[in-house]
Amino acid sequence: MGQKAHPIGNRLGIIRGWDSNWFGGNHYADKLVEDEKIRKYLSARISKGGVSKVVIERTLKRITVTIHTARPGIVIGKGGQEVDKIKEELKKLTKKEVQINIFEIKRPELDAQLVAEGIAKQLEARISFRRAMKTTIASTMRMGAEGIKVMTSGRLGGAEMARTEQYKEGRIPLHTFRADIDYALAEALTTYGKIGVKVWICKGEVYGKRDLSPNIGGASSASGKGGRPEGAAAFGGRGNERGGERGGERRSGDRKGGNDRRGPGGNQRGGGNRPGGQGGGNRPGGNRPGGPGKR
Image (tube, rainbow, N blue to C red):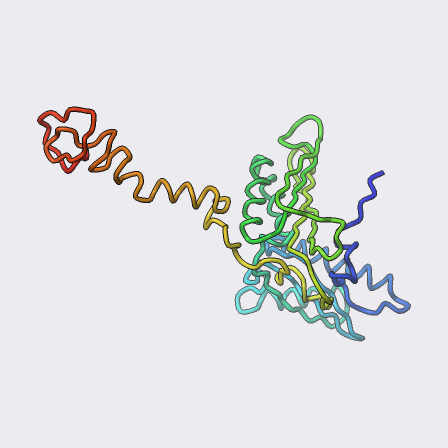
């Protein structure tokens, strides 16, 4: 049997807080079911709003719902109309007073739920699963994650038999409790069946005591490295090895200057005996008119 602990449940109370924050008392089960209803409703209602998680806090008469989203504009709507509608709908659903807060996720590439949903959407649009996984891994690592693992399983590429494929980059220490690992599962509803997408993102390690209140240490406040790491390329490169050195050597003065092919004093294709040429090239220049050593 696969005895794998859920990476988030495993860290609750150590470096992760709970997504529902309230005291149950005698009506614990009712509140739990209500929380699930709220979450299901919101994920269906704002399916294109980039919702990462919904944090629910309760007092005696009020429910405070905090929506963590990468696209707050879609959730808020024009002049806050959308939020007001959602608030009224939740009031009908729960029959209690509801307050809605919206929390913006600054770097959606470091949020496992949004990354998984992004891959699932690409699979639904019939993009190759390998390409979707690899481009996602590259963009997450570029944003400063310490490691990422992506696993997809199902009828990949419409194959007759279901299988599992996974790609990894960096480090994902699942047995280290202080490692801040974000995990999420999403499903792509393709024409040939469901494809499951699992994502693990390591954002660094947490030292010392962490505030476990629900809206701190969540999706937007990453504990690892912030922004683009030092060696990262600007667009799609893989750090310094390729972008920096190669680009530097080729595009600097070496290619057009002195000893390479087309330089004014070049050895291979230099000026020869052409008028205007300076280098001692091997080719006779003839009587062609020309600039200083260039063809």
